[in-house]
Length: 240
Image (cartoon, rainbow, N blue to C red; front, side, top):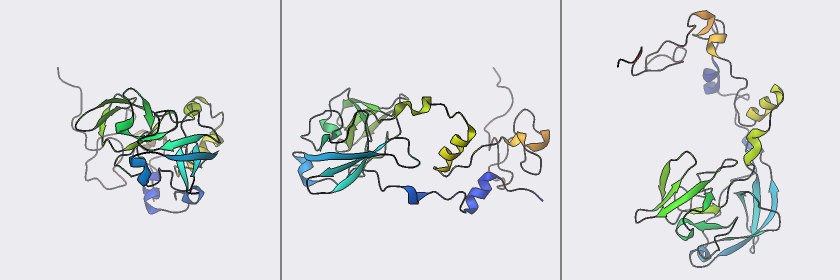
């Protein structure tokens, strides 16, 4: 009798692999576009900066004059009591949220909307940032740290600054238990064991049958067999 692989167990569902969404504070996104944002700006005050389970970047609680509260990705240097502004007329200063057309070239930005009004989809992880390269007729070009350049609609909003908590990856875990709880908050099974380190009953790579790596498998292989190098385009040494 075989043993279900972790990937197969995840597909079945269950409490172990269920995303702990009840720990989430709410939707961390920009509020809907206010009418005043198109011509002027809307003032928000940072009431609190909190930690959300499963998220590396801190979350800021922003409230406007009407009492409407929203959650946003906190940029580096944001503090409680700070006044920030949403809108095209807002100054391009740290923490403010502006449409890309109003942000000068060379500025470092984060939490960029993929489509105007969607609340922010890109560059949201701790320490993340993008730089605005140029304004063109097709849209606004933004470059990510990887060097990739993406074109956005000029009406998409973004936050001026770098996402906070950028040094979190430099802190050592010190023990496996800390790593276990970190991944558990993200509904990821830890630790991840190599297939070749298992026994034959637990994994197709187990038992020393594939000491130098996995054998390529077909794209149409069944779930229990579809592991390792899947549908490789070529094998063997490259001919010169």
